[in-house]
Structure formats: C-alpha cells, structure tokens
Image (cartoon, rainbow, N blue to C red; front, side, top):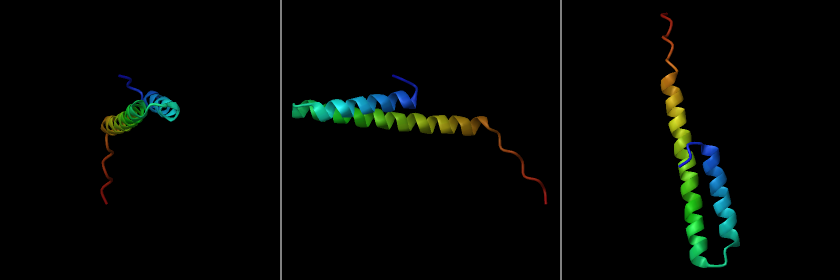
Amino acid sequence: MPGCPSACRERASRCTELAQKAKDSQLKAVLEMLAQRWSDLAAQLDRAEALRNAQATPERPSKPV
C-alpha cells in the first residue's frame, strides 16, 4: 500500500481510464470501485498528514494583554 496521496490519485486515475475502456460491465464496475477506494485512501492520507503536521507544530502561547 503506498503512503503517498499522489500515488494513490494516479492509481485512481488509471482505474478510471481502464473502466472507461472496459467492455465488460462487471469489470467496469470493479474498476470504478477500485478508483473510488484509491481516491478515498488518498484523502485519508492527506488528513493523516495534516494531523501529523498539526501535532508536530507546537502552538505559541498567547501574549498577555
């Protein structure tokens, strides 16, 4: 499983391309489902990275007024 959101999006795109060319309806459905799952994984990885970055950046204390 790739850990890079852009790699997941590339795989999703490839699955979509293959689904558009598929002549068999079952194959098309499987490829469309795979494309969606790759896209979902990319989004999850984006969220995980954002959370990791947020936790790595300590908040600055507010200046007293």
